[in-house]
Length: 428
Image 1 (cartoon, rainbow, N blue to C red):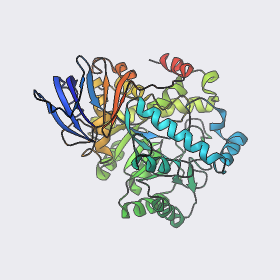
Image 2 (cartoon, rainbow, N blue to C red):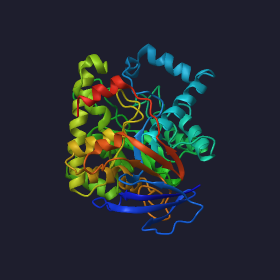
Image 3 (cartoon, one colour):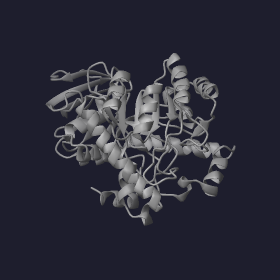
C-alpha cells in the first residue's frame, strides 16, 4: 500500500525538541518516501487526514522477556510451582502454548506502539520462532531482535528457566555456537544474580560469572559479530562484565570513576529497566507477593539504577530503555510507563525521554540506519497519537494508529490488566 498522511504534526525522534507542523508523510510500501509539504499527491496513495494529531517513530523496547503476563506470581521466586511450569514448557503440550503466549504478547506490544523489541532470554527458542514467522510475513508483529536462551554459570540468574548453564568457560563459549545455530541476533549473559534469587539483604546483584567465564562468552560472540548484553545489578558485576567485553549493561548500578572509564573504553551502554524495580520496591507485598528480602533488594536495585544512569548521562555514556516485560507488574503494553519513569526519576525532559525510547535506543543496538526516527528512506515504523507527548508523556497511553514496515493498524485494541494498571497508576 501507499499512504499519504496529511496535515500531520511530525516529531521525528532525532531532532527531539522540534515538531514539524502541518506536513505530509508519504509512505511507499515499507519505507518513508517523503516528509514535508506536498501539494500534489499521486492518485495511487491512500490519503489519511491527521489534522491536529501527532506522528512519532515507533517505540523501541530494549529489554523484554516475552513469555510472561506481568501478573504477580509466587512461581517467579522458584520452588515446586516453577519447576512444574518449566516441565510443561519443555513438553510437547507446552511448546504450542508458549508459542501462542509469545505471539500474543508481541502483538499486544505492537498495538501499544512498540515497533521494535529486543528480547532478553527465552525458553526453547520461542522468541526466535516468532521472529522468523514475523519476518516471513506469516504474522504481523514488531521487529524482533532475539538472543535465544541466556547464558550463565550454574546457579546464575535464569538457571532453570530462561538460561542455559555450565561452569566451564569452554562449554559456556560453546553455548554461543548453539545459539548461533538457531540464528539468534545477539548474545545475552547474566553476570550477576537478581532480586528474586538473592540470598543476602542488600546484595541483589551478587556476582555469579567469573571474569574468565565472561571473557570466554564475549570473545566467541564477538568473533561471530554478535554484541553481548549482560544482566548486571551491582557495581562489582559491572566491572567484571565490562572487563570481560560486554557491550550493554542491563539494569545497572552505581558508577565510580573506574566504571565510567570502563564504559568509555568499551563504548558500552547502560540500559535501565525501572518498570519492575519501582513497583516491587514501593507497592505492598500483598500485591507483589514478595518477601521482605526481595522488597529491600528491589529498593537497592532501583536506587543503584537511577543513580548509575544519572552518572552515565552526565558523562556522555549512552543510556537506553527497556521494560523487563514478564517481571511482576510489567505488562507487554506499558512501554509508555518506562518512558514516563525515565523523565520523572532521571531528571530528563519528556522530549529527551521519548528520544531515548526511539532514536537513542536504535543507535545503541545499531539499527538507527533502519528505524528509530522518521526520515526519508527509513522503515515506515510509526505511531499516531491525539495529543502532544512532549507536553505530557501520558499521551502515549492511547495509540490511534500503528505502522510497522508500512503495514497500517488503525485503532489498535489492547487487552489490559485493569487491576495491574490501577496499582501502577498509584505510583505516578
